[in-house]
Length: 349
Image 1 (cartoon, helix red, strand yellow):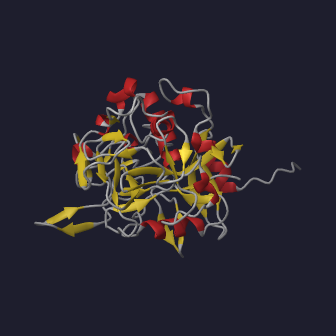
Image 2: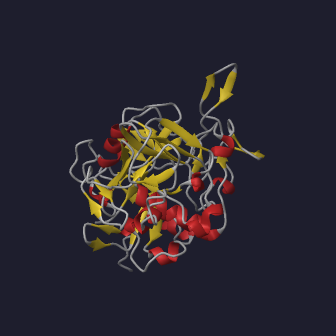
Image 3: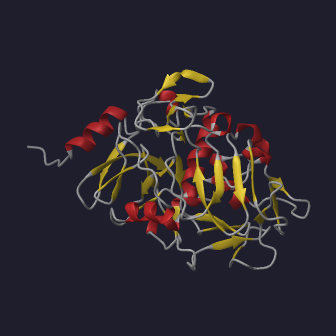
């Protein structure tokens, strides 16, 4: 008799998807449906990128062959996050709660990170396909024949459709346009991401994909780094670190403080006092690659006063402002809304 010890669910999912999907069990012995993303260099991902390995695959100084991203916006069961189809996505939870639900699953599990989100977005732009989603009250904006199974309605000048069940939309609601792709990458609910933040305008992030080690993302964590124009990573508060301005510039001085937004992420550009945006910010999808500007879809929201944590993809009523590159740096870590959820991710460390 053959001595193979296949897990039946994992074997079936990988066989049916041709390896595009897998199943990973957590410390409660419950499955999550995941999408493997394999190692790439910056040059493979965006125009002008170097041969450096993309930050999503680097933890400390080690390089990893893959990370695994949730196929579905997560639900929460017994205090743990799960990537399951056809359920109401967890919502109304703050940044720290999202972290805790992911970390509780065991080593390697973590709140989906900005490096991972960026890597997947670069692949989306390379493919030429821009995913749709629940961006117009249960339907896809500009594609209103596309709809998902309603799981949440609310009262606002009459009954309105909000969330739809995870993965219940058509293949065009997946990140790659196939049913093997990540569902609801765009729309449904905003998704918390780890590993980056803005503090009084200063752009801060972890080195590589340290989020995979469940590194502390507390406000006072020593793992946050800022960046200089030459790409050097330094302690927050160092002179001349790069910052977002209300005019959607990357500058050395924040200037006016406050909250603002633009329907187009791709308007972000270097300020007059900055000769070029460093490669690390392009790799992390925190600024657009100039040669590919028209491929970035979605708006940008910034509040450069206080600590702001990233949310991505936009929610069910953001219409033309939603998109794969939609990025909000306007939420404090205490924000908890009915249109705000999360993805978990896994790396086998």
